[in-house]
Structure formats: C-alpha cells, structure tokens
View 1 (cartoon, rainbow, N blue to C red):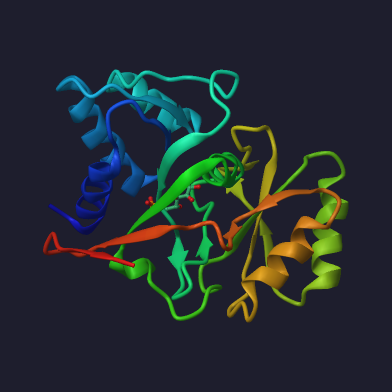
View 2: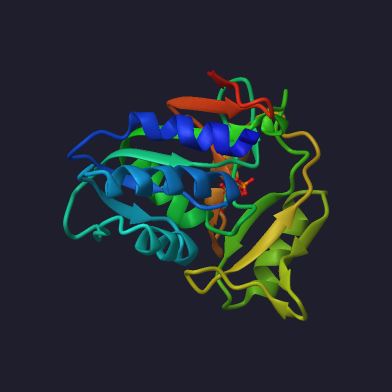
Length: 221
Ligand code: 5RP
C-alpha cells in the first residue's frame, strides 16, 4: 500500500449505503474510486457524479452508477485529491486540470473530504503553481490582465505543442506565486477578473483532510 492508496482507501470508509457522492480526479482519487467500486461490487448502493471525463470512465469501469445534477440538488459527500494543503485546510487544486468541476462538486456536497499523500502538506500555499482556468476567447488579453496585476510568472498550460484544453473547453494558466500570503484574498481577486472562469484555490470548503503515508498509515486533519 502506498501513501495515495492509503488515503484513498481510508476515505471510502465515509461512503455509506444510499449516498450520492462526488468522485474526484487524479492519482489519489483513483484509489478512492477503486475502493468504492469494490464496495459497489459487494452490494453498496450509491450514486455518483464524476469531476472529470477520466474519473467518469473509471466509475463506469467499476460499475459505479452515475447521475447528473438534474437528478439531485446536492451531494452527501465528495472525495478529491489536492496539490497542496495548508494548516487551515485551504488547498491548491487543478494540477490535473479538473478544478472547475471539482469546485462545483465540492461546494454542493454536505461534506468534502480531501485525500493526499504527506508530500502535499505545506505551511503556506503557493510553491505549486496555481492553476487558473480562463476562457479561450481573447485569452491573450486575459493573460496580459493577470500579468499586469501580479508580478509573478504565468504560463499557459500546454499539451505537447497545443494549448491544454479542459473538459469544459477552456485553457489553463499556471501561476508561480511562490508564497500566497492570503489565499482568501487572492481567491476573491482572481474570481473578479473577467475572462477567469475559476481558479484552483479552495478556501473554506474542506471539512476533513486524510493524509496518507508510505507505510500505509493515515492521519486525519
Ligand atoms: C486535479 C486535481 C487533483 O486532485 C490534484 O492535482 C492532485 O492529484 P494527485 O492525486 O494525482 O496528486 O486537483 O485537477
């Protein structure tokens, strides 16, 4: 058992019969989905919404019944990974490009559990480049707007020679803030910029963090 698996499997303990749940994205969420799939094969009855096309495929592989937002008005629980977790449980997410759907699912869940290996714990956010999802229309101007407001390096995410395109058809800019003094302030500022769809700062959303260690131990925050 590795650290990501330990965290993912532990989170599956919160999934109970009859729940509607949100399935996160990434290599740690993979293990939670795998475990939940095993529980479904043993008779657990749940319904789920996936936060990315990749996680949707995984859910289908494990026969986890999928629903859309038209069928429920909220979720009981969402489980997802993170790129950085600070002591206040603020997060940077979006390394895998799924931040918009991940945030939508997280804020519409009664409980949001974050699963991460111990390397994701930081004293302050910002070493990991902050993903910012922007609309393709006039993206050059949105990038310039970001550069004019913050004196840090911004990089349009690429997929080979092409610009990376999210599941929502948008682009991502990765911003190297270094240290983010006030995640809440930055979150509000970025959200107010026209052209920015969403950003990877998750502040005040997380209920529980499960940290996994290489020896298979888990720690709850
Ligand atoms: C995807 C995410 C992931 O949760 C985050 O990148 C962590 O991924 P991993 O579990 O593979 O380290 O936010 O958009």
